[in-house]
Length: 104
Image 1: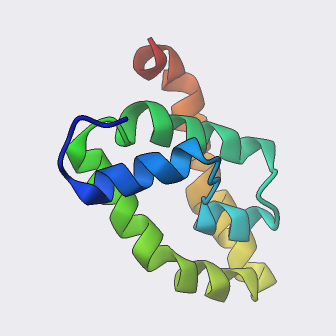
Image 2: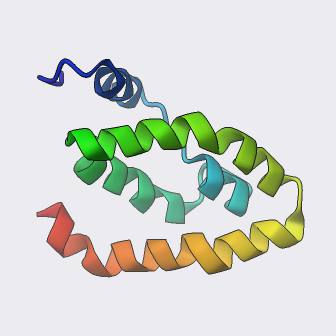
């Protein structure tokens, strides 16, 4: 359980502990929440972002603002491909290449 009194952080931690898998924009881009590429995004969120207050605030902001964006993306095949190839795939590649640095 987080030691912070920041309730946004606590709420994110609670959702993570209950198995919440939300990666809205990546899920919209890939068309499924089980795409293997999304796993590294979740891992980075859990290992790097959620344990610190600035990262947790970013995740909280993302979870509040991204559902309508993801919905818009998911309804347009061309946009899904653009977001996947131009945004998500490069982030996944960078996280994969740097995993030894942030996972240790």
